[in-house]
Amino acid sequence: MKSLILLATLATLPLHAEERVLFAFDEHNIAWQHNLKLTLVAPDKHSANPVVRCGPKGSPDYGHAILYGTVLHDGRKFRMWYLGMIQRELERGQAPGWWRPMCYAESTDGIVWTKPELGLVDLGGNKQNNICLLEGEVHSMTRVNDFLSVMHDPEERDPARRFKVAYIAHMPYDDIRGGMSRVGVKESRVGAMITATSADGLRWKIVGDRPANAGGERFEVSSLYRFGKFYHASGQLASPWCWLNDGRPAGRVMMTYRSPDFRSWSQAKALSMVLPQQQTDPQPTVNEMLQGFSKQMHMGVGVWNRGNVLVGLQGIWQAQPAGTKGHDGLKIDLGLAISNDGVHFREPVPNFKFLEHGRDGEWDSIALLQGHAFVNVGEKTYIWYSHWDCEGKFRSQEIGLATLRRDGFGHLSRKQDDNDAHFITSTFTAGKASINVDGITPEAPLTVQLLDPLDQPIAGCTATITQNGTRLPIQWSKKVPSGRSVALRLNFPANSRAKVYAVYLNN
Image 1 (cartoon, rainbow, N blue to C red):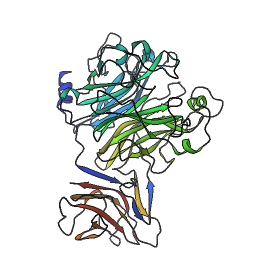
Image 2 (spheres, rainbow, N blue to C red):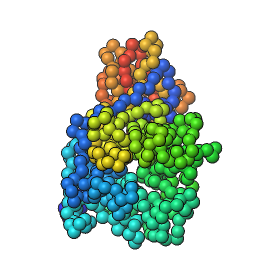
Image 3 (cartoon, rainbow, N blue to C red):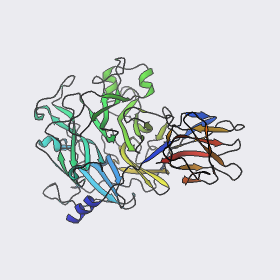
Image 4 (tube, one colour):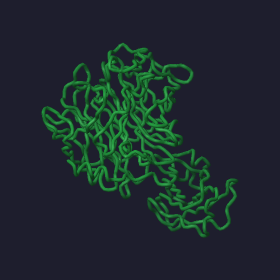
């Protein structure tokens, strides 16, 4: 046990490099386009799925292993935090004791996972399990019940706070010191946003003695990330506790709170994402929305922080069949989302199903759940996700893996075959650049120019791309003027079949 904690403490998760990633589907950074079209790409589900399965009876994940959680890579191994459940029966529609343990797993390849015996939390008289320890002054604050999002914060000066987590605990109102708003709520418990910090990701200390959202509404946190000067906690809020900008009911949408210090959180919140049909389609009543009889978001966005941009997956809650009870007949797919400011998210292509639920009889056939679980591995991007049997029958609620070309979420290519094409990026500080591209042929190389902020070519700063690869350096014909504000123009000749996935810019 001591050696495990030492390894976790010494491991240094990679910082976000001084790099800007310009994805093909980022129309803010690649706004200026001529004769180009965007094609989004769905990943492949791994043949070994589900890669993390439920444990045996008596284990903390016997009921289910769900990636309402996070996967990080520390340079040597993959680390996963996920939600378990101790039995396969619900009590009044909830997990036994309102508790789904924060479980921990490790892997060397992201496919085969081990569940180390941490020796931290007693379960049935035995501490030989993979449950992480949460300590705090109020017991109900330590009982994770829903979504947990772990982040590593290398800029944190206090080593005991390098790992941070936000999760949902269903606390009795009587446990909330100082009270909490009960507007629109009749239940005796509330979904409370709890935050905690850790030196190693295994032993955690609760921040404060009351929920981070104690001054606000019933909120289901699902994302935690640092962007700019603030920590952001985003997740799901539903009518009647939220509404569209014009006051109309919204159903399930994504809202975001922020904090400058990870101690005090804003009561004000941002409406971060709404599906297009929630803005335009005739809306059912609030009760019908909560039941699920309309298409809406589910649990915000599972986020991948790439430094200058956030990408991730959001749950596309398909409208349930009329007349069903509970969540019978509900289907959830996962859609792609992107944000340039850490607050406002959007779909690059509305209603695109990035990852679809499986066919009848397959392990992930009902509803998919997104996590904060993205890692680049060699030439591939790994994405872990979960299956939710929302009908409460505990069918294969486990964790799967999907893969695609490294950063290959989508590509730009020519729209009209008889015309050339090009795009111009947003401005950046001149430095090294590389490109993620496929489909180049010797007869149709791509050419690149550096432009000044007024779109004028900078003499001699050109390059020719003749190869395919996920991270090809752009070799300029002349030394790039260091520190100068520039933009990049990429030209597709008229016979090009090239697919550009991303451009990487380094100072």
